[in-house]
Length: 354
Image (cartoon, rainbow, N blue to C red; front, side, top):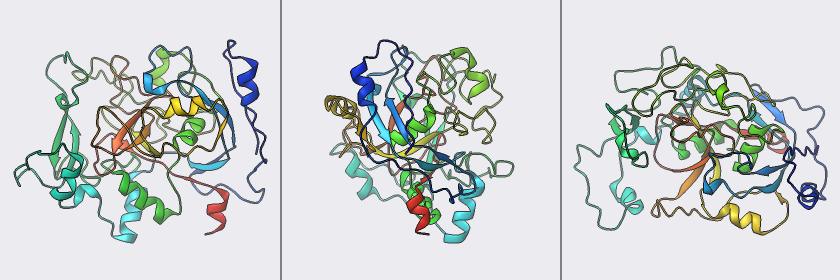
């Protein structure tokens, strides 16, 4: 495997640099194996996962940085699009979570004991939709102020029962749950990336805050995000109110598009707020980490959440700035929203078995 060590922080000690070079077999892409259509080879390497020292917007759960090594893999150049997901559904007849009847007995397992059952008129198939507020929001931690449950919304009708996918074939598919993403992966002979693989691919040998560097003033030209006061007014400097067609912005150093903004992307790792501390305590390079053994989020103790990466069109410099490479967030496995999608990865071994 080709090892890439990228560190531009002069205060890193030689002891850490040495740990970034684990003694292990070198694995390379077979010379005869070409990337599948729509994918690119990500050469394996070693990097520091987590928030970089110069990132003053970093959150506690993005720290501390810790050395990680990953083997090479193929990755989708873009997020899975509506056109690609449509092909999957046409061939399999798959029904997404947002299209299925709601099972209250299953849902209440993830809620505090004693939570009353909502009226049947509310327990209808649907998904979460974003709504602007009419005035400034003093508490940006209260997500309920800009999210609403929308009955009849799903990947085919992303803005409501009267909407459709016409003209949005190359937009990332949304209103997809983690379970739906896994179903697509099984059909396509792919899998979801680990958090470490996703972040390594997003960095592309760049130990900076964003995939393009540390310059915050380039966000509008590099990513689909929220400009203006969130969640009141989006000035649309970047040209889009909600999702943008894939490849609307420049790719990163590995040729990957939308690794910042547009829609959040699922990874296979459990969201555990203690996980980075656990890895850092090992004081060694972690090879191909698969994430925490179980989910843990003190803010959502009843949910088993998976990590999503990359931020979305709702990320604002004044709110979460989650188009930063180290940004991470947890989301439940059996629900969907209009700002979460996914991309897939594959190893040479997976492709050789097809």
